[in-house]
Length: 331
Ligand code: PBG
Image (cartoon, rainbow, N blue to C red; front, side, top):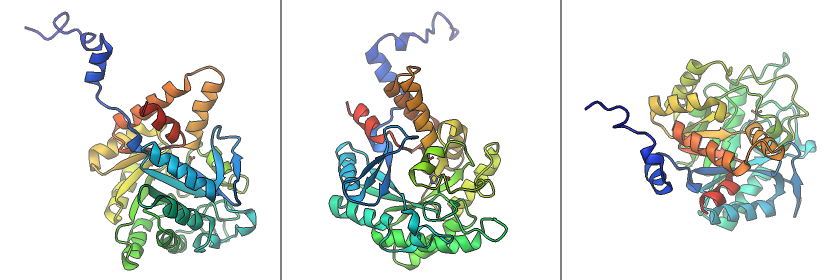
């Protein structure tokens, strides 16, 4: 008997809801999500971000409330990003190393309020702290230096770990930083602090609203193409991932997400390491814009994108829609 129509009818298993449920290969869960949150100074402050509809900067007291909401929704981890006051931004981004900076205060507050019930992921890069908006130290020629920057990033990661971060996530794309950060963490007794390397981070046009959110957008001169990957390059992305794994990353990230699912799939297949996808601010804004003009059903599109990340092999997804998605997924 040949396995062809009508012996095979692909529509048989799709004919009813119970059967579709039974045959579903992938399903996103709330437990797959990481929720990025923007922190700002003050008390009882909410600042909506115009270019990122539905997302606000919150003062530390509110951040702890968001963390509790995440726990209730079964979201296992939050990611914190600070909107550093302009007066504290400088050429060298020294505020990143202050034990009492906004980031560290937010980490401690969430830890105090939530204990070990939620993971705290922190971003390692200088752009929320520099007056020029670059992720590292800039020399006279305007070049973002590598080795000098890495030395500062190690101290930044140690500062975050000392405040209680569970996962430090270097998003800077400097060469060799994973090894140096890992050595620093080991030397200072932070044996259980994970490193999630933004290993395949592309110089993308999808980051605009994020830069508004952390206040670096207006400051940034030029671009980040001398350190972030060319969107055209998949082979080079795989080399980046291989290096970060060899240097001691516990997990790697691909960023942006939806336009780079081929990279997610290749990383998963080639390395079998936990790989996370970042549904970036620009992706969030596109979904919201499509919903606002009636071009798409927001919830349906959102769940479809999360399913697509999982289907491509993503272990988890960073998404500003995490709480909404978790509530939909939990019914
Ligand atoms: C900066 C950083 C960026 C994002 C996360 N960390 C932006 C950039 O590289 O300019 C982007 C996140 C998003 O767009 O949602 N270190």
